[in-house]
Amino acid sequence: MPRAPTTFDPFNAVAEPKRRRVLELLAETDGEMPVNDIVALLRWPQPMVSKHLGVLKEVGLVSVREEGRQRFYRINGEVLKPLYDWAKTFERFWSRHLDRIKERAERKAKEQQASKQKENLS
Amino acid sequence: MPRAPTTFDPFNAVAEPKRRRVLELLAETDGEMPVNDIVALLRWPQPMVSKHLGVLKEVGLVSVREEGRQRFYRINGEVLKPLYDWAKTFERFWSRHLDRIKERAERKAKEQQASKQKENLS
DNA sequence: TTGACATATTCCTATAAGGGAATACAGTTT
DNA sequence: AAACTGTATTCCCTTATAGGAATATGTCAA
Image 1 (cartoon, rainbow over the protein chains, first blue to last red):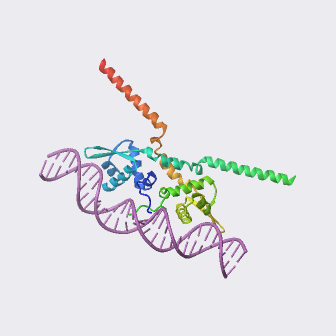
Image 2: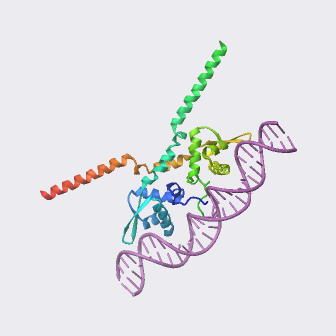
Image 3: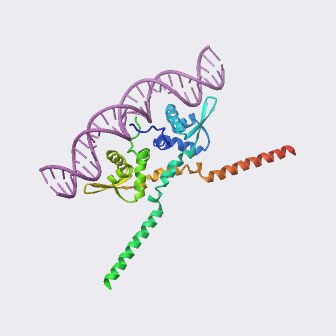
């Protein structure tokens, strides 16, 4: 079995750095942007931009409005929420909170050891 | 150019659902776990578990302690922080905050229209 | 030593990728 | 109609899967 298609879910779509870049760009403008603007800003070959937009569109991360010969792309940020929620699950592994928990645990351990030593002395 | 290797970064490693499952499991225990426990809990073929663990290890998402013939795997959650941080960038697209902004904008629009009508009337 | 156990590695196959180049296609202007 | 513009699609190529099955490796026990 090959890897799941990039269009399988946001996790796969966003694994590609260039696709993340496109999303960041669309998020900045916080509106629509025609393909050629993206091409100009990122300085990538136009077919490359179109292809990546195609993947993003298929997973629902962007939506398109057609006007004349232009296509205006807009980000659908909510589709990234599952990713955010999943990552947030592991928050305790890097948050300060953890440091505090660690410190408390270590202090406790020291105190226990101290009291044990007292017992031995008495 | 093919897709970036799964071991390229956390984004790619975590694109595979089974690998996410393994991480969730390791996060639950919040400690170490030998391969066979994972095999038993997930009911996957042992080589499959070992292979996925191999990828996770190569990107630094897990670390191993060897003891006898057992390998104890532990999660390195902090490696997921870049993923979290990136996704958080888009938080405004789904947070309540956005709703409030939207509401305010819509209210404003209505008020403006109302005042325009007043002008027309006067 | 021999065998049982825990885990990793190898081989195989089908599938899909992303980039580059060329080209197709639809709308617009002349 | 012809030329031009904005964008999408197709073809080609190299590389990397993930799963399944079989096997290798290392360790402990009798």
